[in-house]
Length: 289
Length: 259
Image (cartoon, rainbow over all chains, first blue to last red; front, side, top):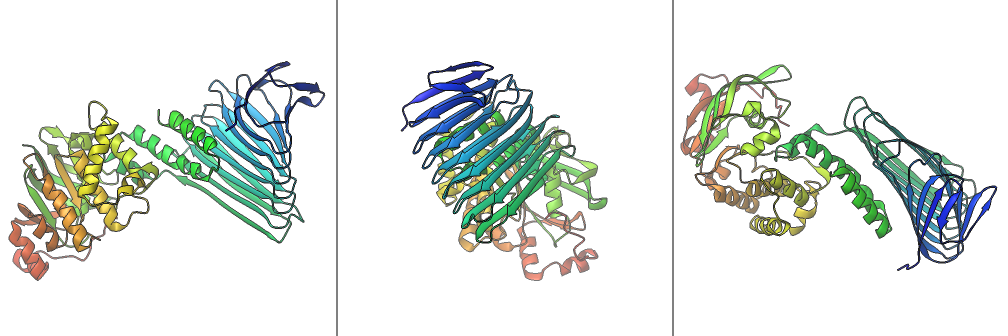
């Protein structure tokens, strides 16, 4: 149980936190030396770089809040660290561009779950570099998009070292005239033997006017690896809707149940219990209105 | 006492007329067996009563007491007191049976059922149906065997307590023990507040759940009605005697639109 809790609020040049930091031309840099929980509220301003010293365990709760114009939080994760991150978005956001970099060194683990249920446009890009032996990363996205909003998630994991493991899971529901695009990129560099790159992307569409794409890319330049991808875009099953209605559930409530049911299995793919619980709660809160 | 009254019902699917004038009146306390060769419209009738969007009502009426149920949506029909036990219950991933049932029971009630009361009722019915306790907490019908799905349909029926149950080959895929359990569940529902239309091909179900009325449906029409003796006759002789006795040309399957 980690008892140290810190908040970081970045709004333009104003930084509110009890943690030490220094400003450089590259951005605001934090060095985390001990196990802790971090609550990061990033509203607007310079890039934030968080360096985790060796052996640190940390749970990061990242919230992107208004006005959140192209906020950047990069993570450098040293050897043997165990970093879990939960990313969510303020309901007031309208447009958000995120471009993140995460570097993971030897024997370190990074698991990130993104919950995107708000009505806004999101262009989310993350590149996770597994740069040390036995480094691993799991990146999960659960997304509901509706009305005319566009959300795109480009998630790339690069296996640069031996015996590294990268896993992507993207589960989405898209309604009305909204757009949802998942681009999953697994990139195994030559020499990264015994590495793994796996990804699964699933989107269910509720309406004819939506745009939905689940694009898996595997770029593999090494023979001694394991890699897989599964991508599916499908329409909501009318028979499911009928079945639920035949038990007295209204069509609106039945749609919510199907949405909930479609997203919920992503929870089984999350290792960290705290991440799992937070995502489960947000799915329940945002979907089962 | 309630009445489900079907008058001159014509139903098409994909521009093909399947039901060609069904007249049927079912009262609570009655169990109507609906028999007939495959593909002649039995399941279509049940699905049309429940309001499956695939089936188009071309003519006729269906009243539940004084409510024209053709004016109601599928969920409103359920709340009015109709229940369809399906031949092929749909799987819904991510939604547990128990969560779904609680939502369904709440939809049927003016005020939400307490968690304690719900669990008590659920546990009691699960035990009666000799279901595996974990089935209630697994995703709806996902990975259920054929027999488990049918018992699950009975679980839904027992908890929702409809006025009229429409049971579509609820006995298919059941072993002898499971058939007894499902039959017990239907018999337990029998009262002056419950009626049913049961589609089955087999005497064994109607031995266990004795129908008050038996109808034979051929080519979209009820061609003969009677009592339990009709079940016996069909079991012994099949349907060929209909051709001779009623001068009806028994067609091969006209198309099974129910699957």
